[in-house]
Image (tube, rainbow, N blue to C red; front, top):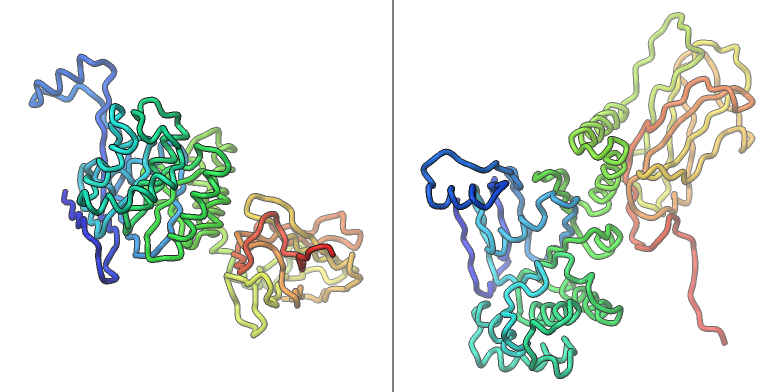
Length: 431
């Protein structure tokens, strides 16, 4: 176990956080007597049970990244942040932190309840390595941002949770930190304070400050973060592009509810879905000969305007869905093809079929293909989506074959908004 914590302002691009195979194990006791016995007789048999909160976590955070950290309660998020900040040591593994860290882990952390707010500002500055003179220059702006009036000279034990949040955040953002860590601390306080905090965080995100932002508000992570990390049962379940990780986490929460709260079962089903999506990305070979089936869907290809197969689609860029299907009974007349677009949370977005649009699909023995074009793009907000494909009789009621979730894909969108679709629009003042 090792920790390299360089508490100084870095002048190059080396400011980063590196964790290698970090584990954290807590020993739990069902009575104070057993805890005391383990403390005073450490060489005897363990009297408590072990709980592994972090399991071989290996992850790096680069300078200037804004990383949203997701996970259910008990997933290990707060423990990870406490290890990064040095509040807690890992059981094994290594942690390297370069640069100065400012953290809002819990309201009032690092505050002496008997000291006034002003004195606690200086205390926190000293803990961060600032001299009295350096803090003298920062204190006026910290007090102005906190905006708690005469309470700044009252003991913080008299503060409300909102006052704690104001002062803690004000201190954290005025110490020229290389890394800012925020763990759900901004949920306390009035609307005006929260707006001020978000504006300040946005300015930090536009600089070289690395921000680790823990929140249960997935929409906030989508808006603010350039990267997302999902912790599940002490392990890194997903790490990467924000929308993709958020969609994966949303899918997991839905499966968690479906599986009665069993994390193990939900993860297993999620992994199976991923494997199915990978398998479905290719086309099944055509098998000649007689079959009981009338026809079978062979697969789907998503292609861009250049005809290249893609996994990610720009929301406003042209693309096409190529549906391949094998016909064994070519006597069927007027078969209908439908392609349903659904969001990762199973919201039905759009479902055209060839009957609605007055089209007749090719229906000859062997491999057939029909293409659904989106010449102006799909115009939905960024995130995870999937396709269902169905073949039906000419009434579009009797199903020949229906393949649910035949293809998963990601939509990227430069436009960030709320809701589902990107509608062309303008804003103007009424004159």
